[in-house]
Image (cartoon, rainbow, N blue to C red; front, side, top):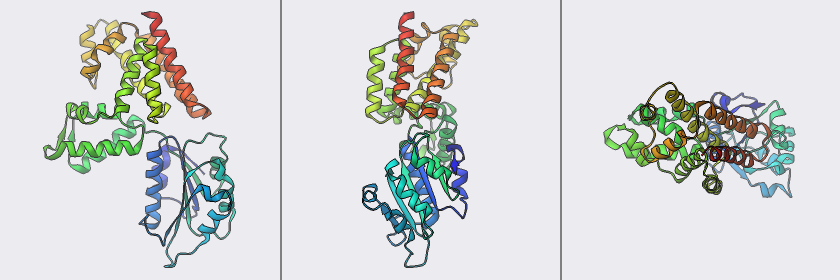
Length: 341
């Protein structure tokens, strides 16, 4: 079965009884691990229980492709359900997984975790085509999903968050579920006994280097500073930030530029148009934002936004060289801005 990222939570809340194996894959490694753990705990309770949970290393499958199926066929000494885990899987694990899915003796649930797999991936096709298995995509959270996670986290902690702080966090977080949860836990501690969180609090606490570099990259591309944009792309690549997360940050930036430029073209004073944005432009970026407004009309910003959306779609559709597609889009926009200066 093929389960989209948007359907994943509903599927995991009530998985079919006939389910024998699940593949979690995608660029958001934190979300892959979180969803795999959610299903694993639902099945056996304690993932550290050595009598009910067995881990298989991909390297061990090279010489023994039937090992995964053998582990799944083992019965629990206590008669309870068992779980077999395979982490860091690649297409090299397709044959062992095929043996597992075709085995009539497999009794344990198998959970397989992998990174990004293209549509032609043998491993992905295997799980998508099996009626008693599932392949679940794990892509970076969009702003709506991040907003839900933020609201849930703060609600459970009894903390109120201002709309500006909510919008700021939704735009800053989401590239990796594990990082997002870590930042939210830090913000809960930051809020402490005050029970509230403002935009200033969020900006002071949520200052991950990758987030700062994303802002700098967007500012550089919009201002036509090609060398700075290249440097930003290099830093983000070294930090493991996925191309889709970069493109979404750029989309948010150009959507705000388009809206502000449209207000100015309709007669609003530039300062008033910038101040009307919600969330407001962070004070350290205000100068760069105004610099970009000088170069981008509403129509031009809209065209750049479409280019970024198309690049994200291409990353997901082809699964081929997302970093190159991202760089091509952003550097093309930077060169266009430089031509207007």
